[in-house]
Image (cartoon, rainbow, N blue to C red; front, side):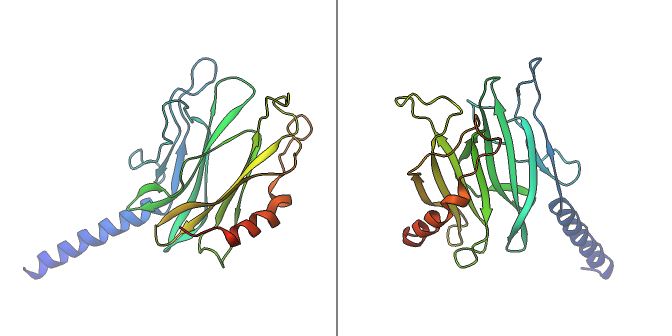
Length: 216
């Protein structure tokens, strides 16, 4: 190999590395297409870089099209790479909606969802908790209402809630559910409050269950 050829190959390697760094250092979201009623017909996407439309993450699913209100933000680091929370919503035009949650890691500019399937209604709450004694990545905790039809509950009445916690497993390289239960008591629904608040009240129970939950 000549000196000039060696310099040329080095320049190519540096250029490729710079391009990868640039595309992985930022991202943008694209909403889905809507029909005449304002309902999504194609899913939203999150794509690397400022304008790329390749290597994007798209919420899976044939039954629900998560095309509304896409949002993304960096919520932590995994091995020096951003961990990105991405959400997008489905609506069929009724009183309820469904939101898809993904915790994404960029691997060679491709987005990989580290969560199992997590979809929450508009009568839910979720938070990211930093628990350094448990995991180097933030834990996702979520509460979604349980509709007891037999008890005559209306849609936005007080309900019990299903609570789930997902914790990053370093050995498996993905999030696993570590806690799952239904609350003993009911919490106000959207007939009584504009914001569902369950997780702060349930935090002692969630953490107590996490301590005795078997690791994967």
